Image (cartoon, rainbow over all chains, first blue to last red; front, top):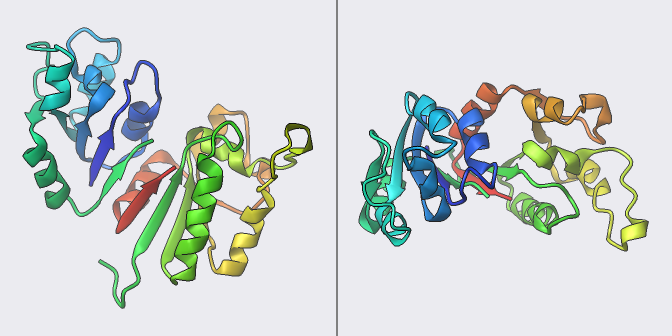
Amino acid sequence: MLHIINKSPLSNGSLESCLRIAAPGDILLTEDAVYAATAGNAFEGKLREAMGRFKVYVLQADWDARGLGDRRIEGVSAVDYGGFVDLTISNNSCQSWL
Amino acid sequence: MSEGGVKKFMFVNRKAPYGTIYALESLEVVLITAAFDQDVSLVFIDDGVYQLKKGQQTKGIETKNFSPTYRALEGYDIEKLYVEKESLEARGLSEDDLLVDVTVLGRAEMGALMNEQDVVLSF
């Protein structure tokens, strides 16, 4: 299953709840959620711990828009819009967490 | 995928009832989905568990108290209501505080249930 998160984990609980509840699968971070994948952010430890169970992606356009450059945590992959579509196809279902 | 055109729909409710419109909107869509004879599950996670709190009195905020609707869902053949155990505990609540019968699931069981759905809608 693909889980899509679009809020920063430092101001919203969606990512944390997703990591607590979701069965292993794919997570795509979009919009402000991309900050979760930056080295040195306060949520980094929780994301790294979850990466044993989840494959984590960020949406490249959102990453670039925020000037995050080379700060991406190792093991997190970037996808373009086409890659986003591919993820929705390769998974049986998806959930956009609010 | 389920057979015979019936899909498994899960409605994930994660917001408290009156501060935003999400909880009420979720109920509206749930009732619509039920009208199409689909396999519907409602889950309540995080502040969403407050939607099921007994004793809601909304007169003072001049807002419709829609909490009785959860008890009416049975009449629409919606009988699968699940609450996450950790969310309940984090709010100092237990099953006795809820206005309708639910199944309490641990986080891993909740994740597994989510995984077997055809459609998951977030509110």
